[in-house]
Length: 494
Image (cartoon, rainbow, N blue to C red; front, side, top):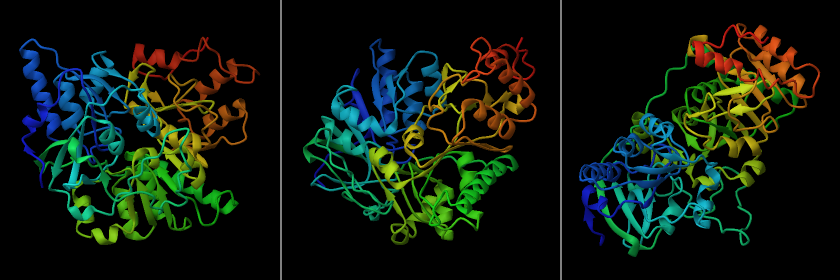
């Protein structure tokens, strides 16, 4: 190999104040682990010397603590996009120390190529292997790697020996042309391969390789609880009923599932539903539950952007790569989340809200309307374009002090026009073909917690017979009361 071998500190010397740096990966999967730490350490030294040091950070989605956390704690982030899930970075964003702009994940690469987000100075790519000709075998996450590698002036490779070169064949790297030259993206099944198994870059741009054995550090999800199991079971029962009614074809449809404890519980319930035939997935994040269902034969194929699985599961995959390559495929996010493909494949989309309102609007990103939680992520890409869009969550939070069903969401990420079904542990509200007043009653009667139903019905009655029975002076009273007293219960609407 002809590329220079660098220490993480030597690699960080290529990163300067006010640069924009693109990072590979999607979630902790495929995210660089050691150069980012060295950049954070450099920022601390620069700040102690009285010199400014902040960079723009662009990734596929969220990242590991070794990237987002380290840089945030070093006060080294000028701006961040398109999504994050790190507590320290979240604190920096919500305190105004970091500028953050939330984006649909499917458009990040295109907006970079168009120059909407400025120039990409350096790309840092985690790899399982790189050849002298510039062929890179990516690791467990793809994200926006093809685009940042092509646009950046310089590329730094983190060569992680935990990932075998035998990963070749697990990826499908495809970057579409931009308008007006774009052609149809020829994915007609989750199994279709349309690109290259490797990322090809100009080898002259690779300034060096940093060797590492750092782990992704994917956190384990909570065990499925009685509450999350009930939410998952309600989703499975609803889909079984749709199959029996003929509104879902007997062959079933590909599934998209968000990431987290609720998504894990839903996938577990689908795996146990004998009436649901074996199915495929076309999604962003492939997590532990998906691998378990591949092993059981319930999932026949899963296409995604990242393999976000825990340490024991990734070892299981690597021990039997030849078999798993027949069932798994990793793509760039502008393909995994592409609206054209989502609509064509007819996905059943399943995501988790922070809150839903009486008319079916969904807040996925902000707490009490002002503080960022994580961001919209890819939920909008799938919700707006899916065949059947489902939002599932518990009916309450904070030990019953917060109702996840509110009169009006404090921030709108997905409008009522895109949301088909809302499901909690209490039941299912099928919103298809219902007027706003009908939607409100269905959501209150089927999804709201019994402790909040009378209160929400009382609010609805204040709206009278208008098309959308909302009263603006009362719409956020539950939120305001929680901020003042610590509970949404017992609101007086008069």
